Length: 215
Image (cartoon, rainbow, N blue to C red; front, side, top):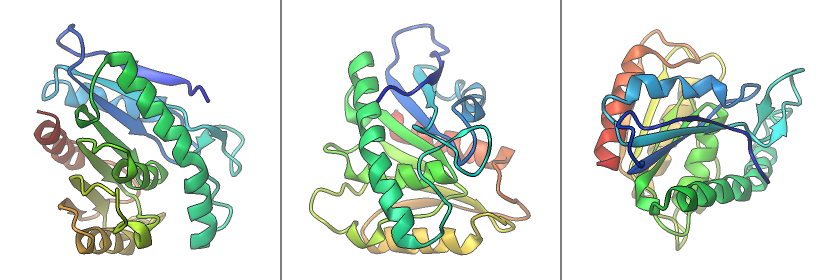
């Protein structure tokens, strides 16, 4: 499947030395997160930023896209949706790495909300370990299989607002504890007063993380 993408070329003007793939939330599109590149390009001047549209039209809004349906919040329903979308994202990552002739170790996934769920599922389960996952306002899907053979314990940085009214702060605590229990190094933290959004502190924290894993 071909996904429409929004691309922000490296500030250096040279061939990219790393890739950041940004995965948007429910009902948005790739344009929603590509603006983060403007804040991160100083720290990552040799990085190309790529933000694809999710593969399916949003079934809860007249516009926008989704990685999977959230018509039901039943964990099994969500897991099936993530599992359906995972090969599509996996293939997209492969295509980007091939296009820019870079190894898995030079790609990081950044997600917001539903995009974080996809990042945390696909990133550790790639055939080869990627640089890491930066997740905003998300949740962990498929925690029961994180201990399986072939799951890479890549660096994870999670940021969540304590006033999030879409994915409550309990989602952050559960994701962090489940990842750490499976051997992942989890950094990040909780932002006081933040709702379901990304703020300036989160952007700066994300820049430090991405610079550390892609250097």
